[in-house]
View 1 (tube, rainbow, N blue to C red):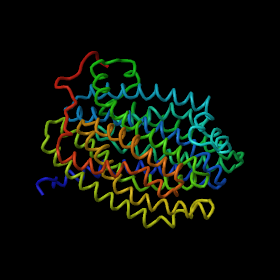
View 2: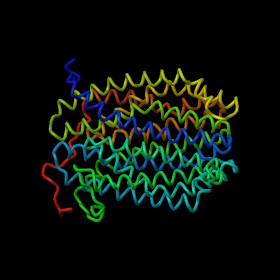
View 3: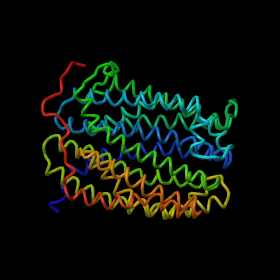
Length: 459
C-alpha cells in the first residue's frame, strides 16, 4: 500500500477536478447527441452529412485541446512553484497559436467546404448536405479557439467549475436554438441542417462572451487580460515549443490518423457512416470519466513535480494506474450492456441499427485499453513533462500500424465494420501495454519549469 496514495485529501482533490471535467465532457456529449437526434430525424442522409462535416470540427477541436494541454504541462508545474506571471505568459502564447490556427480552419471551412468534405467521402449527396453545415459552423472556430484554450489552461491552476457553468448554459442555448431552427418552431422557418449550424454558431459566441466576463470580472488567480496577447516572451515561447508542442503534435497525429480512419469508413457505404456516427456518440459518453481522471492526473502530478516532491508524484502515478484499470473495466461493461437499447433512439434503418449494435461490441473491448493509454498519456506523462512519448507512440502506431491495417480490412478485404474498427484501434491495445511499462519505470519525470521567475517585461 505504500506505493499508492492513501491520504483522503488526494482522492478528494481528484474528484474535485475529475468530476467537473467529466461533467463538462458530458454536457459536450449531450449537445452532440441532441444534435444528432434532431438531425437524425431528418433522415440518414442528413445525419451522414453533418457527421462528415463534423470530422473537420473534430480535427479543429483536438488541435485546440492539444494547444491547451501543452500549456497545462508548463502551467501546472509553475503553479506548484507559485509563479503566476509565467502562467499568464504561457496562456498568452497558447491562445495566440490557437487563434492563428482557427483563422486557417475558418477560411478553409467557409470558402472551400466541398474540398474538406471530399477528403472524407466520395458520396456527392453527403458532400452537398455537409457543406451547408460546415460553411456556417466554421465561423465558430474563431470563438472556440479562445474559449477552449482558456478553459483548459485554467484547469492547470485547479479552476474547473467555470467550464461546467459555461457548458451547461451553452447546452441550453445550443439545444434550444437547434430545436427551434431545425424544425421551425415558434414561428421560425424550418431550416434543417442550416438551422443546426446557426444554433451551434450562436452557442459558441455565447460561450466566448461568458468566458470573457469571467476572465475580467470573476477570476482572481491568474487575472488574464487580452493585452497579454500583445507581449512576447522568448524564453517561455521556447519552453512551450519544447514541452508543449509535442502535445499538440501528439494530438494532431492522433486526430489526423482518426480523420484518415474516418475517410476509410466513409468509403464503406452510407449505412456504415451512420452506424459509425452512432458508435462515436457512445464512445464519447463512455470515455467521459476516463478523460476527467486523466486531466486530474496531469494537474496533480505536475503540481507535485513543480513543488519538488517527486516521490509523491510517483505514488500519484501508481494510484492513477490503478484508476485506469478500474475505469476501463467500468466503461467497457457499460457499453456492452447498453449496446442494444441505445440504437433505438436514432431514426435509422433496422440494418443500420443492427450494424451499430455490433460495432459497439467491438467498442466495449477497445475502451478498456483506451482508459489505460489516456490516463497515462493525457494525464501522468504530460503532468510529468514527458510529452514526447505519446507523440512517438501515435506517430508509429496510428500511422504505420492501425490505419494501414484498417485500410486493408475495410477497403481491400471488405470486412464488416465491427472487425474494421478493431483493426483501426489496435494501436490502443499496444499503447496500453507500453504505458504500463513506462509508468512503473519512472523515466517520465521531467522538470520543465525554470528555477528563477521568467521576467522579460511586465505584462
